[in-house]
Amino acid sequence: MAATATPEAVETTVVKSLAELGADEAALTRDAEFEALDIDSLDLAELAQIVEEEFGVVLKGPDVAGLKTVGQVIDLIVAKAA
Image (tube, rainbow, N blue to C red; front, side, top):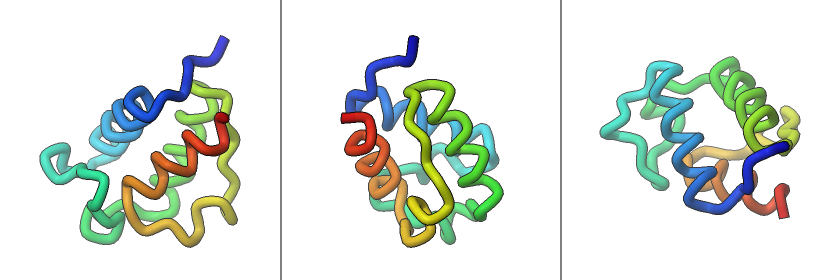
Protein backbone atom coordinates (compact mmCIF):
# COMPACT_ATOMS: atom_id res chain seq x y z
CA MET A 1 0.00 0.00 0.00
CA ALA A 2 1.28 3.45 -0.92
CA ALA A 3 2.21 5.94 1.78
CA THR A 4 -0.14 8.84 2.45
CA ALA A 5 0.97 11.83 0.39
CA THR A 6 0.82 14.53 3.04
CA PRO A 7 2.75 17.68 2.16
CA GLU A 8 5.29 16.85 4.88
CA ALA A 9 5.77 13.24 3.72
CA VAL A 10 6.13 14.30 0.09
CA GLU A 11 8.62 17.03 0.96
CA THR A 12 10.70 14.59 3.02
CA THR A 13 10.76 12.03 0.20
CA VAL A 14 11.54 14.60 -2.51
CA VAL A 15 14.36 16.23 -0.53
CA LYS A 16 15.88 12.86 0.42
CA SER A 17 15.62 11.58 -3.15
CA LEU A 18 17.12 14.69 -4.74
CA ALA A 19 19.99 14.59 -2.23
CA GLU A 20 20.63 10.96 -3.20
CA LEU A 21 20.67 12.06 -6.85
CA GLY A 22 23.48 14.50 -6.08
CA ALA A 23 21.82 17.77 -5.05
CA ASP A 24 23.27 19.62 -2.06
CA GLU A 25 20.86 18.77 0.77
CA ALA A 26 21.49 22.12 2.48
CA ALA A 27 20.30 23.89 -0.68
CA LEU A 28 17.10 21.85 -1.01
CA THR A 29 14.40 24.35 -0.09
CA ARG A 30 10.95 24.77 -1.63
CA ASP A 31 12.26 27.79 -3.58
CA ALA A 32 15.38 26.01 -4.87
CA GLU A 33 15.47 25.82 -8.66
CA PHE A 34 16.47 22.57 -10.35
CA GLU A 35 18.98 24.34 -12.57
CA ALA A 36 20.81 25.75 -9.54
CA LEU A 37 20.75 22.30 -7.90
CA ASP A 38 22.18 20.70 -11.07
CA ILE A 39 19.09 18.47 -11.36
CA ASP A 40 18.38 17.48 -14.97
CA SER A 41 15.54 15.70 -16.76
CA LEU A 42 17.03 12.27 -16.06
CA ASP A 43 17.12 13.07 -12.34
CA LEU A 44 13.48 14.17 -12.52
CA ALA A 45 12.59 10.91 -14.28
CA GLU A 46 14.24 8.98 -11.42
CA LEU A 47 12.37 11.13 -8.91
CA ALA A 48 9.11 10.34 -10.72
CA GLN A 49 9.81 6.60 -10.30
CA ILE A 50 10.52 7.05 -6.59
CA VAL A 51 7.31 9.06 -6.14
CA GLU A 52 5.27 6.42 -7.95
CA GLU A 53 6.70 3.65 -5.76
CA GLU A 54 6.29 5.64 -2.54
CA PHE A 55 2.93 7.35 -3.07
CA GLY A 56 1.34 5.69 -6.11
CA VAL A 57 1.38 9.02 -7.97
CA VAL A 58 2.33 8.82 -11.65
CA LEU A 59 4.25 11.82 -13.00
CA LYS A 60 4.68 11.95 -16.75
CA GLY A 61 7.11 14.11 -18.72
CA PRO A 62 4.54 16.78 -19.53
CA ASP A 63 3.59 16.98 -15.83
CA VAL A 64 7.08 18.04 -14.78
CA ALA A 65 8.24 19.77 -17.98
CA GLY A 66 7.37 23.28 -16.83
CA LEU A 67 8.35 22.88 -13.20
CA LYS A 68 11.35 24.87 -12.02
CA THR A 69 11.43 24.51 -8.23
CA VAL A 70 11.36 21.82 -5.57
CA GLY A 71 8.17 23.34 -4.13
CA GLN A 72 6.36 23.10 -7.46
CA VAL A 73 7.10 19.37 -7.65
CA ILE A 74 5.98 18.82 -4.06
CA ASP A 75 2.72 20.71 -4.71
CA LEU A 76 2.09 18.73 -7.92
CA ILE A 77 2.58 15.38 -6.17
CA VAL A 78 0.26 16.35 -3.30
CA ALA A 79 -2.39 17.60 -5.76
CA LYS A 80 -2.23 14.44 -7.91
CA ALA A 81 -2.46 12.23 -4.83
CA ALA A 82 -5.64 13.90 -3.61
